[in-house]
Amino acid sequence: MEQFSIKEVYGKMRRDTEKMEWRKLVWSNYGAPKWIFMPYIALHRRLSTKDRMVKWRITNVLTCPMCLLEDEGIDHMFFGCSSNVGIWNRLLAWQVIRITGLDWQGQIQWAIKHMTSKNSTAQVYKMTLAGMIYHL
Ligand SMILES: [Zn+2]
Image 1 (spheres, rainbow, N blue to C red):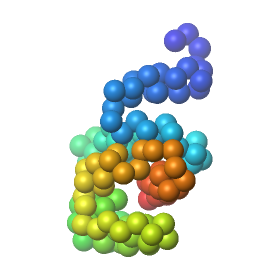
Image 2 (cartoon, rainbow, N blue to C red; image 1 turned 90 degrees about the vertical axis):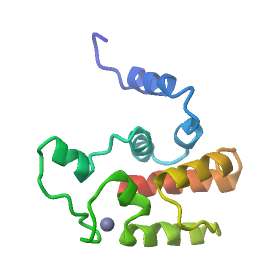
Image 3 (cartoon, rainbow, N blue to C red; image 1 turned 60 degrees about the horizontal axis):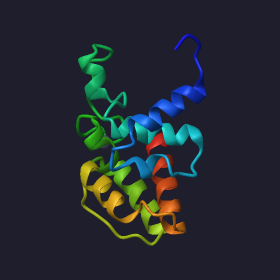
Image 4 (cartoon, rainbow, N blue to C red; image 1 turned 60 degrees about the vertical axis):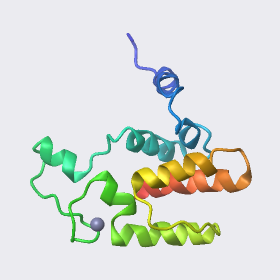
């Protein structure tokens, strides 16, 4: 690519995920564009979580800043951290969805199975998931 083009990068990202089973969680999402990029990064397990930053020697502190109890990694950050699980559970309750006790992979598999259609329930769920990942 001789010139940087957001449109070309976006198109390449979409093409790169054509065979990913989670692609409909990311690309068929009416959330804010800045939200949608974060699930893409998270589903590739490329978020700058502390466990990765320690490997890059950016920090030597692994402790989760939300609960101060466990090490921060993607599995802990969204569905393992007691503070963040409370936020997610309230967002699910608002949507009248009852799922508990699933880790990151379990939540994503559940979402792929139940929330990849185009109905309004799935659309709200996908926007909420993207917004939650972005803000946390
Ligand atoms: Zn935590």
